[in-house]
Length: 369
Image (cartoon, rainbow, N blue to C red; front, top):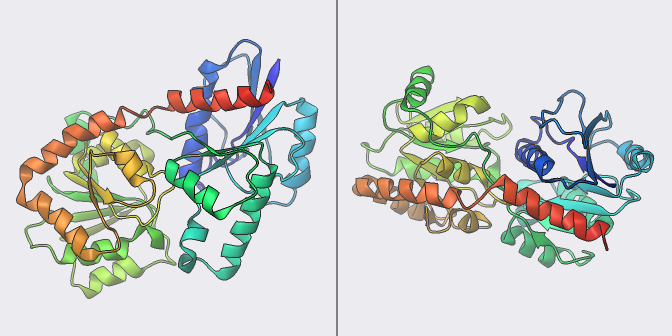
């Protein structure tokens, strides 16, 4: 019996992106386990896991958080008690002497690549802790080719060349019924035609430039709806909108949206705009595509890998480039329909079944070596 341990303590609201990764990975791993393979999931007891019933799956609550020093001895002790053959961490804050062969998934290197958006102390800590995690990892998984290149450029202590295993949109993201879109429009008081941004307001998401570019469009442009978790320590985009005279008729701020509403919200938008400066993978554009929405996004980091030629790409640091891209959608209504058709085909290229299959190949290569 080969025993894998997957650390799913990041499957909480505090880690929206990584949590979605680990949740979808564990669900897709279960049906692909061979006879003679077991999987134990470590999770935060405040957020119980839901996964397919399977005789070879066990879930163990763990109160030690990824931010605690306590995990440095609690998890290695647990892995020994479980007689685990492999440990997989989806986060760089992990036990650095786990005592068993270890897989580490790296999602992005934002604190290193955009140092101006974090404190010097946070930048140094991230570099140090990531280096420790890479030293501990038998094999590193990067979620995109862009992340793999960044890893190799910034760290020299990686034990094996990182492998790229991409993510995918959750299965809930697909074109919804027209009634669901109507209901979402009514609930959030949205017009028939609007453009959408969905994500946080962290500085690297580049919302301030998006707002400035939108203000330069002609008044007939559809309203811009900005949705997602709002961090009060980053008010710059709203302040910029107010300074530019963009009232609620032009720019709407919805805040956090329940997961159940996201597919209909994506699909109801005539265009999804994602101006992020850097993404390790970039799930929101792929989720929008899976719902059949036209996408305009940055041409940086991993985003060209995700959207291929199925989206309108622009330089996110150049407001004039953002204006030019959005103006093309205003001038040519057929462009939106073209990219809607492209979106569904592009999204179909990604699946969590593939991600799980490739991840299991990594597990098996390590445990049979």
